[in-house]
Length: 138
Length: 147
Image (cartoon, one colour):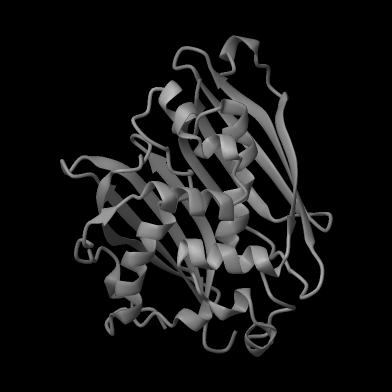
C-alpha cells in the first residue's frame, strides 16, 4: 500500500501495455452482458458506418484502471472513477490493437489521505479517453 | 428522437443481484485485471470478507436499468443511434462478493446539442440493508435522424 507522504504531483505510479484482439472483445461481451454486434462482427460495424469492429468503451475504461488497482494492491481503495470516451479503438480481425496506459498523480489531499490519479490511455498515437480521473484513498 | 419529458423519470427497482465470486473473477479477467486482484487471500489480508469487484463492475447493474429505458415507448431511445459519451462510478463502499444488490435508474437530464441528444442516467446501487453502495453515472449521445 503506497503512502501519500511519499507521493508528489507528476509521479507516474503505473504504466502498462494491453494487446486487444477479437477474442478479448468476445470475452468482455460475455462477462459484461454487452452483446452489441459492432464489437465482434465486421458486417454489423460497417452497417452503421463504423471504420471497423470497435472495442467496447467499457472494456477500455475497465482495463485502464487495472494498473492503478495493482499499484494500490486493493480495488477497495478506489473512491470514484470517471472517463469520457473520445476516440474509438478499432480491433482488426487478424491482429491486435495496442493500448498504452499511464497513471499519474495530479492532486493530493493530505488531510483526507486522498489522491487524484489521471490516466492517459492511448491507441495508435491518440488518447482514447478524456478526463480519465480516479480518486483513491491512501 | 429522445423524449425530453423523461427527464426526472425513475424506472422501477431491479430484481436482486447476488454478486458471485466467480463472476467477479470472470469480469476481472475480461478487463485484464491482475490475478492478485482476484486472490481471496490478498482480499482478506486487505480487510475484506471476500473478493472486491473491479471498479467498473457496476456497469453490469446499470445495464438492467438501461434495458428498461430501451423498452420504454415513452423514452423513444433508439439504441442503434447511441454512442457512449461518458461514464463515472462513485463508491460509498466497494462491492464485495456475496453482496445482494438492487439498482434503480433515473434520468438526470436530457439535452439537445446540434441535432443530437445527450441523456444522463444515474443508477443507484443499494445493498440488502437499502444502503447506497455506488452510483453509476452514464452519458449517452443519441445521434439525430439526419446525423
